[in-house]
Length: 70
Image (cartoon, rainbow, N blue to C red):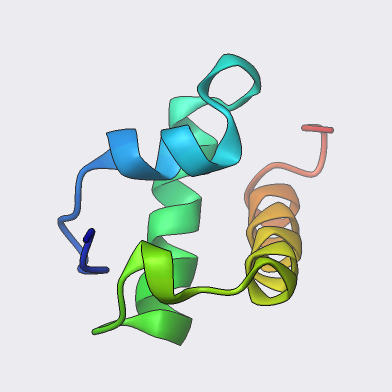
């Protein structure tokens, strides 16, 4: 079980997002999103539909930080 905390390992997030296609910056942003919306839960608690919604929020934050990043 991987608890969601502000200091959780990025490796668990990279594993779920797909490490090959995910940057460290995206994993950092996703950790923030997870902590904001699911803090106290575990990665394993998040259903696929919710994970996809949270990924969308991560993409929004990523673009807000750097509009040229696609």
